[in-house]
Image (cartoon, rainbow, N blue to C red):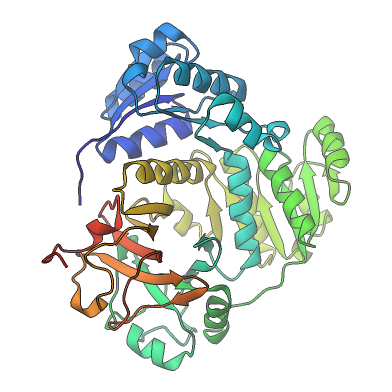
Amino acid sequence: MEFEATMNIIVVGDGKVGYTLADNLSQEKHNITIVDKDPDALRRAHDHLDVMCVKGSGVSVNVLLEAGVRDTDLLIAATSSDEINMVCALTGKKLGAKRTVARIRDPEYAAELSLLKNELGLDMIINPEQASAMEIVRILQFPSAVNVESFAKGRVRVIEIKVTSDMPIAGLPLKKIAQRINASILVGAIERHGIVMIPNGDTVVEAQDTIYVVGNSMQTYGFCKAIGSNMLKIRWVMIVGGGRIGYYLSRTILQMGMKVKLIEIDHDRCMELTDLLPEALVINGDGTNTEFLESENLSKMDAFVAMTGRDEDNLIMSLLARQSGVPKVITKVARIRSENMMKILDLDSVISPRLITANQILQYVRGLEAAKTTSIEALYKMINGQAEILEFLVFKDRWYLNTALRDLKLVKNVLIAAIVRKNEIIIPHGKDMLRLDDRIIVFTKATVLSNLDEAFVVQEQR
């Protein structure tokens, strides 16, 4: 369901994150202006996106005025410099931007984010590296899944599982799977040959499908155990690449009791990491060197994470780790966009800081434009943007509340996957109802929902 353009948005910085944001936001019918000093980057945006382009610095008052900052609803500062982003956001706020978002990445600022928000008048701060590290942490906590997303403040998990021919669910319709496996879960989406579908009870699960399973932590764990998916316990993690993501990730999983072997090619950075992470085993070496990795007992690792700045190196190291028998392999990609390529290479879990950042900001934008009846609490785009998982909070009475779901009609390709009511997680059936203050997890395919009202075919007002 499309909606009219309601927001004027300025994106400062036309790098990977800025371009992806401009692309997604323009597709959702917002008025986008990109500001950047690089004429080649602006030319690419002008040729491929439905946006306006302004050449210049995002900290220049004249440039921001030319971009229409006085009438902008949201300014997003996403250059490669934290300092420029902070000054740009502060300047934009002073010039009349209603809201500002800044990308701030340096770990030195991470501990002061709340103070920075208050002092600079920022409405949102995004740290792509920290967000990416937390994404990897979730995957390591649930290693049998390709990917794990959390909703309802961590109470609901959506796990992505690749179905193999030896799993008992292969060849069964979903209604029979529910009868056979005693776990209160729901399959919200199925990806088959690169195409996503919102299934019903008669949909048959096939080998090589990727399924998206919804439930709480114990329910999804029980489902994985019932289908014979390997429930690996992660003890040792090898991380190649000691950049910001490698640092945030190492620090977090060390606190969780895992052991870390962190490999970094730059000697000075190794010395710095040794001081920052005294409990980690920091090694100076080339992670792309096969013999070096083997000498560091790659085959004995429970998990391997490729985190260098080069996608090609990360792909090659990940394939080597797979060949060496490492049970869980996670690959960071920055520039490569083709999910089909990842599937051909049969990589395990792939994360993209660019897409993680874009998803978080898109969630914020959707929340701003939502009707004053429900708010978007979380958003996750999947399968090249073919589908989305959204979390809505119902905070005002609506006509579809307190009515059995079987008596309501959902928009095509929309599925209510879970209802969170206080500490109760409900996998909904026809008799269940939505109530005030519920959190609703919704799967949608090719349908943009800015609020929960748009999920229902309008009926007589109750």
